[in-house]
Image 1 (cartoon, rainbow, N blue to C red):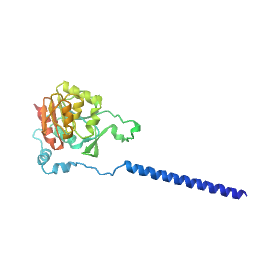
Image 2 (cartoon, rainbow, N blue to C red; image 1 turned 90 degrees about the horizontal axis):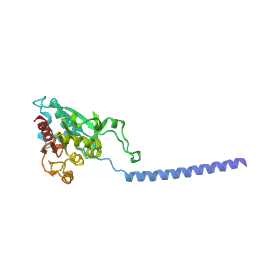
Image 3 (cartoon, rainbow, N blue to C red; image 1 turned 45 degrees about the vertical axis):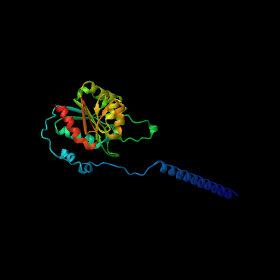
Image 4 (cartoon, helix red, strand yellow; image 1 turned 90 degrees about the vertical axis):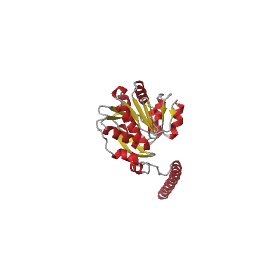
Length: 265
């Protein structure tokens, strides 16, 4: 009799386990189905530097990088801050930085201090986010570069100029940072060079320094620049007083030379 009771108990337990397994499996399949609907296929447009430099029409840009500078001491003694955050367009930072260093300038990369989003946002940050910022090529993350200081650690009086690279994400990460905005406003009050390329001029709009200024920028931010009081021109580079702006990675050579000319005058 006892043996039969035990067999019944085992049978019921197995049945319950099977039912629970079936329910769990059904739930897992449902969750997987939902996750698949919330996710997209990984296929990203990018802009490799080699492709950019070798593209038809960019011969002058290629020559800019592969022709040695004539005067490697032209900007010796000049100090330049590069304001950048995660999502900066790679060539728009590395290109001007390389060129200005070739001319003898000291260039520091300055980033917002590490401030991760609340945990409920579901963002996962690599440990190197505390010391590096992420580069992109158009829409594709491609690498990391170490920054020298955070924006709360430096002053406009430490530098002769500031420049901001573009990238669709970088300016959004910069424009909400109070230390970045104050730094730009201090550069402007001191009449020091402020240079911005591609999407970066929207950071200057947030700093409220564009009223009455002639400038340019990436095509899809030009309305924002006008709304901020700027007079937008369609040109590779526009210089107005202490402001130098440019439109696109293909304008990196003209942009870098304009920065050089402003600092050398």
